[in-house]
Amino acid sequence: MNTEVTDVVVVGAGLAGLVAASELIDAGRDVILLDQENEANLGGQAFWSFGGLFLIDTPEQRRMGISDSVELAQQDWLGTAGFDRPEDDWARKWAEAYVEFAAGEKREWLHELGMRWFPMVGWAERGGYGAVGHGNSVPRFHVTWGTGPGVVEPFVRKVRAAVERGQVRLRFRYRVTGLLTEGDAATGVHGDVLAPDDAARGVPSSRDVVDDFSVEARHVVVTSGGIGANHELVRKYWPASLGTPPQRMVTGVPAYVDGQLREQLAADGARLVNADRMWHYTEGLKNFDPIWPSHGIRILPGPSSLWFDGGGRRLPVPLFPGFDTLGTLRHLRQTGYDYSWFVLTQKVIEKEFALSGSEQNPDLTGKDVRLVLQRILPGAPGPVEAFKERGEDFVVADTLDELLAAMQALEGGESLDVDNMRREVLARDREMDNDFTKDLQVTALRGARNYRGDKLGRVATPHKFTDPAAGPLIGVRLHTLTRKSLGGLQTDLSGRVLRPDGSVFRGLYAAGEVAGFGGGGMHGYRSLEGTFLGGCIFSGRQAGRGAAFG
Ligand SMILES: Cc1cc2nc3c(=O)[nH]c(=O)nc-3n(C[C@H](O)[C@H](O)[C@H](O)COP(=O)(O)OP(=O)(O)OC[C@H]3O[C@@H](n4cnc5c(N)ncnc54)[C@H](O)[C@@H]3O)c2cc1C
Image (cartoon, rainbow, N blue to C red):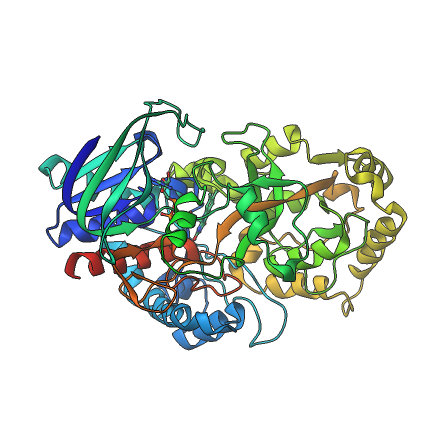
């Protein structure tokens, strides 16, 4: 048994853990930061992320002609979250505090830490239901220069400097299996020391146990992430409102996002709330070059592609690409098919397909201005083109009939009603000659192009899909991709974990995805996007400060 003592032990070296540790360092506390993975995985999921941050009323927005305010953002957040449960009390307080943070201190603080953002602000989750419904009324998705690694970097730097000074001890391959307790208070953690493993970042590692350990501490901060890689838990908690889970799903997070510690802490007296709230995507692709098991990549789609269910029926209004993630998932789960399908053109893919993830955006991740500028030139970005060429979910054809036949020949395509799909594509093309149009997706395209950012980099000039000059035609088979847990351990605004009766679980703090990004689910049912990294930063900061001074 390997035993150590410190002021505060932080469990999980992802973004939330790094931010909490940074706050503890600033407060002069000694810290042990543990992770079940090896050092190559420092930064957790955030390293893989696109680095999109939800920020309100920023210079980047103003330069793009976007007028935003904290009131508008609160309205959007509440319309999106749909808080409707008694246990949403803390989540609601977290949501309000977070929106204030995103409109205030957040940008300046991160800017001081060295972070910068791509000037074209993205418009995610556009909604489509009316002003008080789901969605962002304005573009707010700020992609960090350097993507996920750029978000993680300032906090890694701070932690590493503290390691040099002896203030922080890093312990990799330490898997926590439970709490040390005295009376009703947490006084540390215990668990397994896993065998050394030099697996590359994101690649699953061995679970062989070589020793056990314990760490005694005044406070424990748990930042162990969500459940996205654990399909058993995803299925267990799948919300009734979304029907049954798909039989086939791809996985949008590395295998260590296993949710096991969250479950253990809930069994040991921490209050787990809103476990049935999750954020999974409906635009998942199978990665042709996987890093983790059943590795899926999410397309961040612009609004032009025509979207069909597995039977070949067009998705209803307003379920256009990029409008309502969860509404689309709910609809698709009612269709009885696991897959859905995009039909688009080369012209659309070149402008409208972004792939989420740092490794899929080498230009932004590598801060390579020359490569970034190529985004506005003709041609799809290299990684997108690679998926088109090599991904098993893509088919490409010169004519609509050839395309539909090729889509039908893919697994899952046999149920497509291609006659209906042909009719839809041709009818939509006819609307291109119509300045009025009753097709709300066409209206949405024309509206989107009023925004300079969309016109320049995100929304293709409206065109007929059957125009050979816009071709070839492209069909894409889409999978459900598991990603985020919106519920989690309930915490107060200091990050203190609560017990089922609402009392404080003394000595225990939580932040990041394991805490539902604060309060056990500050997003409610849905997200406005870019809110997860920021949620880790904010809740990590609160829990770090709470544990430093609690
Ligand atoms: C490809 C991708 C793209 C994304 N893009 C965006 C984006 O653009 N914007 C946005 O806001 N969000 C994005 N996200 C989501 C965001 O990155 C995550 O929600 C966030 O990073 C979660 O951080 P965390 O610190 O809570 O957890 P994690 O990063 O999961 O870290 C948890 C750590 O705890 C460790 N751990 C778990 N259990 C134990 C245990 N028992 N003992 C010891 N250690 C343990 C794990 O090994 C892991 O290192 C993206 C995610 C992915 C995967």
